[in-house]
Image (cartoon, rainbow, N blue to C red; front, side):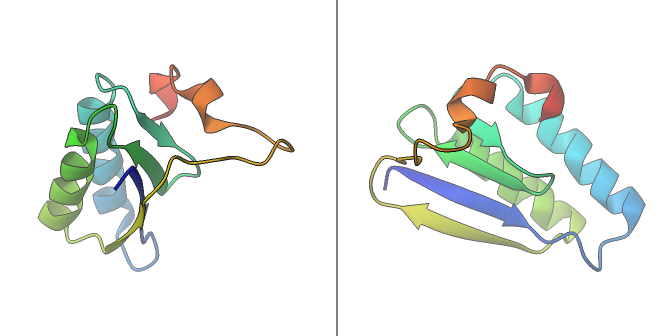
Length: 96
């Protein structure tokens, strides 16, 4: 497996629980390469860089009872040339 998409379900989660989840994720993920946050509740974790961020997301979600889904990708992600490439936002840990 090359990478995985982690999607947390926001609906049905109390706002304070969601903020706690985001704070935990931000604190843990800021030091790891290979993880990109797309919208508020979606992260891409590239296992070639480091698989640990996926375990932090799962652990935080389980602890706070936030439902999530994981979509694995066998091959390297290939973004279409139109739009943006998340690799250009990897260094923005403040948005994580």
